[in-house]
Image 1 (cartoon, rainbow, N blue to C red):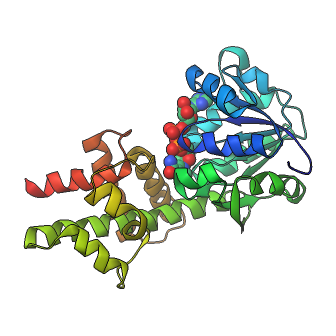
Image 2 (cartoon, rainbow, N blue to C red):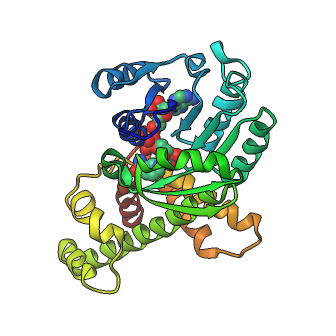
Length: 302
Ligand code: NAD
């Protein structure tokens, strides 16, 4: 049980949000899960507890709203535009003094714009994106990197964040969490692309990909993907990490846009962004990000 149970509206119970919201229910919070997918909402309430709804207006009395949505544009739409029962967005329905925590991987500049819009209604915004994937969302051990301009709201939210993650980092002002998340995923996406190319080149020369992964893992080329992903999902052919290629391509583009916004030349980042955009377009945005290996392999064979 948490020390102070709160009334929480959780928006977006997808691959990540499901486990995160379930952990908040387990921590004793009074949670209402909202998603546009009615079947998922109904199944969540049945299997994990709390309430489920497809009506945004059911979150009007939540003092805390957490968003775990595909993009920052959707987060902004839900909060400031809404539809049907919530014209003008959820922000128009929430009480002043409410706190919104965006845990999606959103664009940092858009997050600051949203923060200003919400502040005009007396609503605080915190960005608190996560890393660790579906397994760590489920067992409450995510890494969470948060940014905030409101120390009091942040203090109130830390116990809530601790129910979802065990490694929490203060990154600075509002938007810094989202900037850090995009930059992390740029580094991870680069490691995956480089590892994939190494496996493809090695295979063509006669090396065994599984042996290559073993050697990388005890050598200087070791990275998260060689350690956790490549054996099962690429060499083993599972291709099912639960992280869509469209979302990863989005993250790398956010990092590239950020580099451009601060006038930092980043040619490697621009190339990696283009490689992931190619994979997304070749595969379809909803396919698993590890299938990028197949897209690049197919391209190489032409
Ligand atoms: P997902 O596509 O599995 O889940 C998104 C959920 O949002 C879905 O249930 C969908 O129905 C719902 N949704 C979409 N539009 C909506 C709207 N307008 N109103 C209400 N609900 C709506 O995505 P995910 O993999 O859970 O990722 C969520 C966020 O977390 C993304 O920003 C992603 O980049 C980030 N992320 C994902 C992972 C991962 O491993 N999957 C890891 C870290 C961060």
